[in-house]
Length: 580
Image (tube, rainbow, N blue to C red):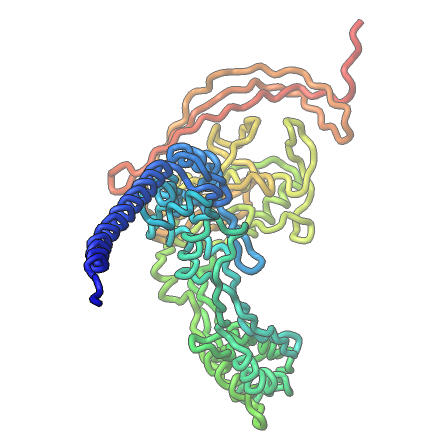
């Protein structure tokens, strides 16, 4: 009996045809789903693109969920002070501030937000928007040159200088200062640190540092101690100066010695040559013979040149060299020094070149019979005689007289203080001042300082006189000639004389005006002890003096001054009578 298979074959054909159709439908469904997913993803990315992810913070400022514009505004507002205020920075224990503006540092809020917001199909960005994110670094603009310059400025302030090793020599002993390393800012690293953390770092920003080695190290100090300081302070040094022995103790040696740093980081011995010579001469003054300058003095009423003399002094260079060698020696501690000849600073040739050979000007003033006052004039004349004023030098009467004291021969005599007559040490020396003033006046000298009397004295030329009151009122004039000016002064025939010797140089003319601006005297009652009555009142007045100085017919100087003399009041000793 045969089998019928036609039905089964038909089923197989139908199944084979159905399978491709199912597969096509699956692919179509998958594509549709993918398109929908992509469309949803794109829609989510587009929807979230203008917002900052939830939970996002920048420099501690929460901007999560805000639109780009809102986030930008919030950052600019919240970080306004932080981004402009001085930034505290520190190095070790030192602290200062860095100026962001000067450093060229600026927050770019918009660029910072752009990194977080904006349309993006990056899954990480979409996930961040959907599920939130955390803190982010701000975007800053940096002017590299300005930042480096500002870091270098604060680095100079913050740097801790190293302490160099040193050895101090005093009182025969050596005292050591141990070296200490310093600290400086590592500028290259600090530039990066500031640029990265000036907005977000902890305050103060700790800048990277590097150690600074002292120039004089501990090894250099130890070497100097072993080779210099200990030998120097071990025992005395004998100085042999052509057979004269002077002993220098360790205390003496350290008083003129220092240990100075060298360029190669060592310490070397240096002796103060001038101080060493002075020390030797202090211990034995007879080692030196002073040179004596030539002088121009008055002999038999005329200038005479007295020759000077050479002296002998310690050779400073040799003394320093030999003492240093002996002081560092372990055994031979004797220094061989020597003497050298010293010439006078002012020689006969120098004196001859000043041409002090003739009388340039002369003036005299009369004085009344007062033994005390006359004594002061005589002593004053002796003190100023033989004073030589070289070209360009200034004569000071106070200096020439020296201290006006009884020990120098001066006595008390009449003076005028605050318009009233009294007694004082050196009374009458204003006459010396006036007489010297007129001698300098007619020699054409430069008149630097003078003050006329408050009252007029008939023995002095009107307006052409000078008072003296130590220490503030002096007579000073400068020798403006190319020759020397030698002062000669003496008292004779009831007059004080002053003569200037030199070589005539200037031509001088003088003019004195008529008296004007008269003022009348009054009566003054004085009950003070030591009152001196005055019974010859005289009016006051003013007068103008003009001096013209010429050289070879050409005017080189013209001076005018006006003197106002106050009246000589009638002085009655005692109290004023009471009114009726």
